[in-house]
Image 1: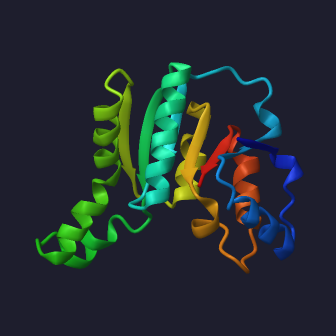
Image 2 (image 1 turned 30 degrees about the horizontal axis):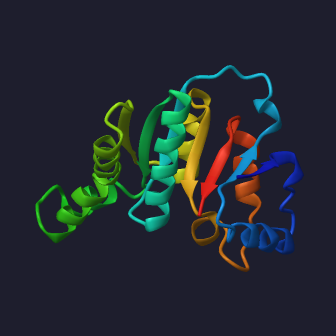
Length: 181
């Protein structure tokens, strides 16, 4: 695991973002630990954000392993700021869009079931959120020892993009943010 202090990640330029994106290609997890994490007490809870990508499945597996090693419970969450849009568009009528919406609403639950089957002694819960992923992470961070997400490069730090929001998220969370490639 590569551990970085959030204050050491300025991300004030595109070249800084590109450098961090190159780090995201590493095969090891990358943890960004905020300065404010020093005196916090352990909560014995870890959260992992999932979507329907292989990277988030790897992140969920890593989160389950870390939770088992630390005797911590695990929250599997899926955040989709457009979650209620399908219901608004369809007026609640069933059809292809509502089937898609139901699938999107069960991402965290499906991942949690898979993890429970593999780690039956681990306390695992799941939740779906209609917030943006960064907003959901900020909302839940005070309750968790760490938040684990899938690969940054494809979802948060695409090439040629200013990564200042990632820097702000890492500073604002108050708990380690771990990216699993």
